[in-house]
Image (tube, rainbow, N blue to C red; front, side, top):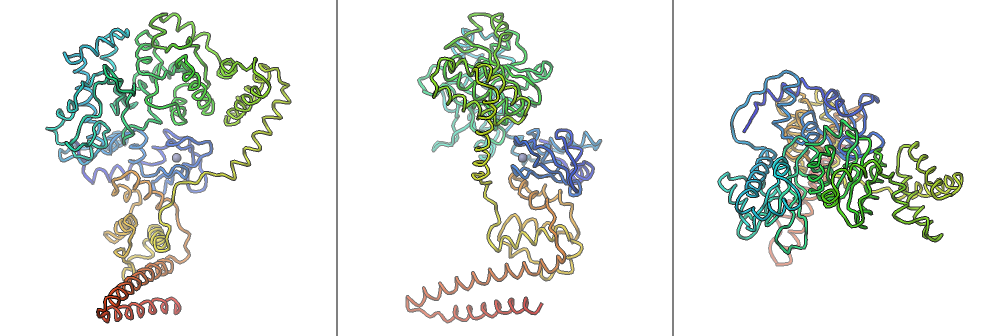
Length: 588
Ligand SMILES: [Zn+2]
């Protein structure tokens, strides 16, 4: 496994420019010292993603994503640290040596486990054990070529097919747990997937990151079982098959979206190149943002039953709201695209593609709105207006309102008036019930003081250090992250490259928090005074806590009739040092 020297990492970190790297994917506009753009990690309409070139870090005020050049590449492309180092080294012409050594990166191990599983399940499908599963797939019209291309596999009816195969490789428990492929039982790690046809799910880079398993010869009520969310697999942003069909989707700027793995394979096999499928979840905002990068139009080919119709409507409006035009392919009632093209052939599908319906018309038709009574009609119109109000693009909104008025014979002016009324009352509601952002760490007085010290130190290092060395004591910090940043700041007695500090944290969440802490400058006229005051605050809280503890001890001893003298003296001493601390502030 690859390992790279600290010097090389440092050289790349010093050469790579965060603005350059982010600007490849995000349209950045300068505002003050920093740049702002739409966050690539969450879906948003106003930019809250910011890059600070002077510190070489980024931070999103919306979702909390943050880090340095390496974290950006890791998060954006879902690759390991080493891979990010290699990629940036390549870009900036810095040679990255390959030393062999113990791999400490969980990502490469997770990919490795998945590679093993893909191969094992695939081989099993084409072995004696997979005979009836293969027959089932053949009966559904899927040929060996397509099964091989997408590495479809089979997990036999046994709890240890995969676990036995990886035993000799001694992966850490953490890897097995985070892979989502095993269950931790009293008898050790057991396979999660059993007696299922296995569809490997790939990241866009072509790496297997999860599985969808379809029941086979079993009475399990869940037809599909998917990998749980793991560090590799985020359901809300992964499509099945996109790693293969992306280029075609980009070429035509359109995609055909289906719900199931077999729908996808069937259509691709029949020569429809720009298909993509969901994997284990409904289409969400993040999916829509992803697909928008490749396609301006999406044809929805969901099941023809009522669940499929409702899912089509939901997905359709999500696409609209993300700026993608949704069209609906009319799939006959109670058929799924898989069965349908198998029975009717690809020509019928191509024909349906040509006569696909705009989402709004599909909505009105399926709800049979023309024949509904006044109140039912009004309810559905309100539902539609509500969806339209969530569309950011004014031109699309107006177009939809116009077609709605034409379809329903409602006066256009009247409809626009209702729409305005409905959205206004909603925007009032929206501002009052603003969803609470996630809980902020560092809320108590001591933690706040610790945070203030770190920020002040980070941005005024030369001014405060080493002249204040005698006062600065990070050992009294009780917040592990802040303590660690503090100790890193004073290491070697010189000002630090703030983006390098981020690399000293392993965990992605920690990296995010560290970049948030280091992102914004503190305005400090007198950094020394701030640091001094904050240390007094922390010490005072510490001493008060110690007094409280000693008093509890005294009570406890006295209630048992024991001597408490030792603790009484201790309390007096503590009170004296507390007094000294307070005196000190008053003098200054
Ligand atoms: Zn964000």
